[in-house]
Length: 315
Image 1 (cartoon, rainbow, N blue to C red):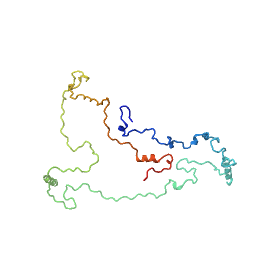
Image 2 (image 1 turned 90 degrees about the vertical axis):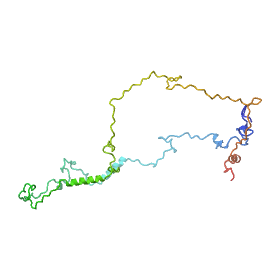
Image 3 (image 1 turned 135 degrees about the vertical axis):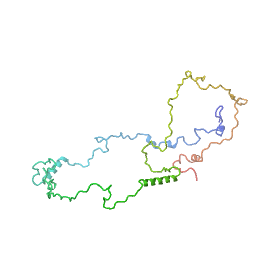
Image 4 (image 1 turned 180 degrees about the vertical axis):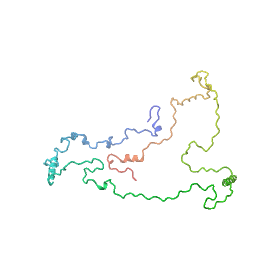
């Protein structure tokens, strides 16, 4: 079957002599699929049950299944809760012996701190601020007194103390200081280089002075007394637009070079004597086929056994 004027044949396109039609495959089964048939065909014919629509609940009995409202207790007596409470109060009041207790006067209110007016017990002696009776105070006796101490000291005078006076010996005044200085100078002479500074000494997390640095400051930069004169830039002429001549660019427009490449001429199509295009013979092509499972489904499943079949391939 040819695909049309100037088109490819079925052999060239899919590798078969004639392509099978897409509307039917020549089977003897009806065109209506079993899944498209109605489940209950009788439900589509005749009259149907009409319930009349749903009803909303209201004070009437129309929204309920029963035609009459059924009470929990039939013919029960009417009870008045207020009347029952009154009767119960009168019944309890008959149990009182004599008349009801009435206080002779109203309650008394206190009229200040420390006042026991209006209380049952009155003043309590334990809470009284009056002090207990104590013995009279007796002043202690006078301290012992002696003659006053002598004024002045024995410094600067000889033989005025109990013991023997120390003998005078000549001694250098700064002898200990001079000995320490000589020892320190001898120690410095034995040292080589500067002192070793360890960088692992524990310090606080933040320095007290954030501007402090272990490095010394560099030499001060000498600033010129007067800045050099600056001349403003003045363009020679107003700016020019680029346009097609490229007059506003910094570099001149490059000269056009001859293109060594030429347009490739199309070759004339090769035709036969009748003026038709020559198509070479096509190679072998494979024919499109269905899978083995699809072939077994088509051969094994039909409208009589599609509900009872369990497998289509034998193991």
